[in-house]
Image 1: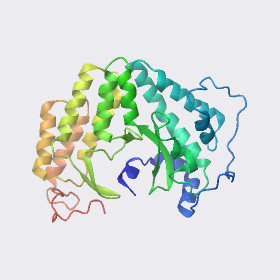
Image 2 (image 1 turned 90 degrees about the vertical axis):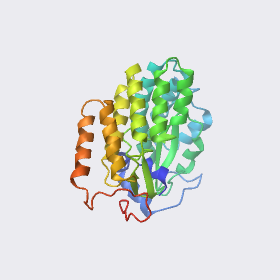
Image 3 (image 1 turned 120 degrees about the vertical axis):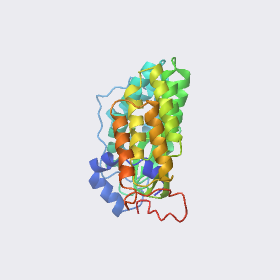
Image 4 (image 1 turned 120 degrees about the horizontal axis):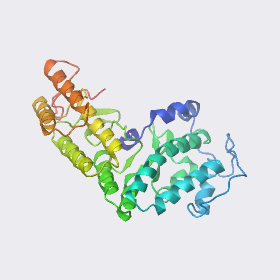
Length: 305
């Protein structure tokens, strides 16, 4: 399982489509072009497209293999909004609308795939770089398909819209998640270092967490448009400090925690959570449950193994 695959893993989606997911694990092989899906995609003749140009005929033909007509129209409406929005306020509204739609579309597509369709979805991967903001990907060692959000596309949209709040927000997304994200709750942020497919250690203590939290604090001082999202990202950074495996020495971890607390840049209860982590680290310095300085070759860290 690759790093990007693990970072895109959405347990909620997999649990919602458990029977299909188990079939993925048991079978392989993509159906031929002429073979019909085991699960017919429902049609809805009453659906009238009001966004007929938002998706091309070829895109619709590919999506039709996995999605109902109404779902395709929802995607088309989503595309229309991303292509035509003009302000950072409209950007915020559409960002919040796309996440739940993407989850439901992913679940529907997986239900209508034959076992073994896996990463490429027998065609859905051909829509990469074509459908704005949406990116097809795979999870669970590429045994299950899912959509996630292209941060690079968000950056393109933000640059052409009026207002700067969306530009700053997308910059923060890119710093914390990289090129794609499936959720603001993704625990595997850029401040976590993978040492193998399923584990690694937090980079807390290297100074980058303080820098990022300062950027978030400054962005919130300028605009509250993305306050909920930015505070959720800050919460993720604080939670990253609470890992049991640290790549940096304990002294550096504790020093960065103190610097963040002294800076007064955390909202609400996040300061309390960080204090709790700081006290935990001091109270159990020799605990086998806590591992520090794991960048050192002979540190003996297990990285969650």
